[in-house]
Image (cartoon, rainbow, N blue to C red; front, side, top):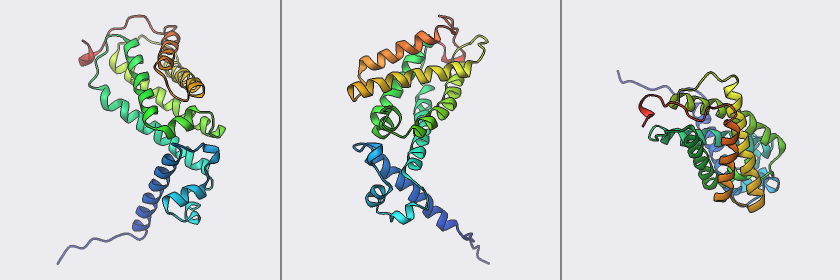
Length: 216
């Protein structure tokens, strides 16, 4: 007797829904490259994505919910980008690791203008920045793990919060630079690096031993 595959009811619809959601977010990200967040509507996204606006309302009640999902994508994609190359890097000082993380994050922002405008420009709704801060807390925890993998850290009380604060410092300096110059200049990136390292020096010893295969 031949094997037959049973397709559960709703599976096809779920797949179609996932594809549409992906297209909505991709379209919104493309539009944000040259449109301010407060000027973009669900109708604009529907027209560009060739999805009826009535169908968009099945996924999102308003455009700010689209932005929330885009910010979540940013954090996932940024962490994936950092982790992809982290294992190939060698750092003899924690300051060098900080510099690398900031440079990579700046490059990631520059390659993704939708993330720049939503997170750094100050033009997105306040709730979007709040979402970003909540996700920054998770990012801070992931970066803390990177530090612990690479360096023999002393027992530092509230380390996750300290690293989170450093993340927020970098975001602040990036945001100020973007509002002032409409781009992240090398000088602005260097200022963010200096600020983050100066803050962390209040908690980290100047020299830390490296761990395992990461040591040089």
